[in-house]
Amino acid sequence: MKKWLVLGFVSLMTIMLMACGSTTNTQTGSSDKKIEVSESDIATGELTLTASNWKFDKEFYAIKAGEPITVTVNSIDGVHGIEIVKSEYNNIVNNKPTEITITEPGEYVVRCSIPCGAGHQKMMTKLVVVG
Ligand SMILES: [Cu+2]
Image (cartoon, rainbow, N blue to C red; front, side):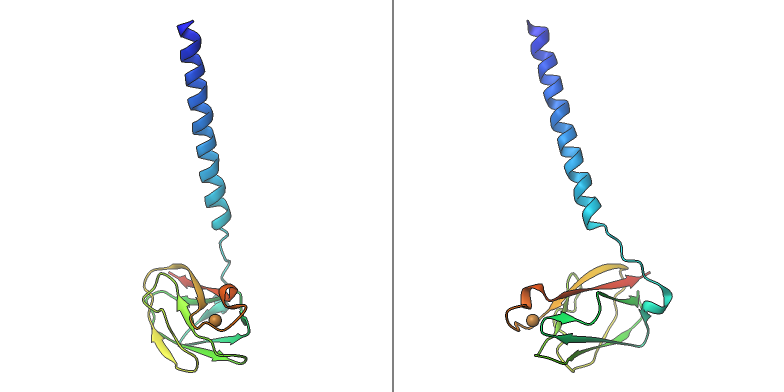
């Protein structure tokens, strides 16, 4: 009788562990859709993001890690700015070229920093910092 109890407990634990494991796997799997950056995508010296209601002109922008670059937000429709999430640059405003340097390679989410209306929440792009 006791044996069955132990066996039942062990199999329950195994099922729980397996469930946990697979959840973690799918999570990393879906968020790790890596952007393929070719050499010609990488901006040097200057980077312009063209913004309109409510999108940016590219799905991603790429720069080199550790290299200073002048970033300009060019709003052609509405007024927008950018926040580079998880960097020190949280408000690069429209038509004010700003020199930035990001040393840590990776993919950064870029979102509009100015409440600009209905599509503001979804106004996002990405910045790939190539190491
Ligand atoms: Cu906005």
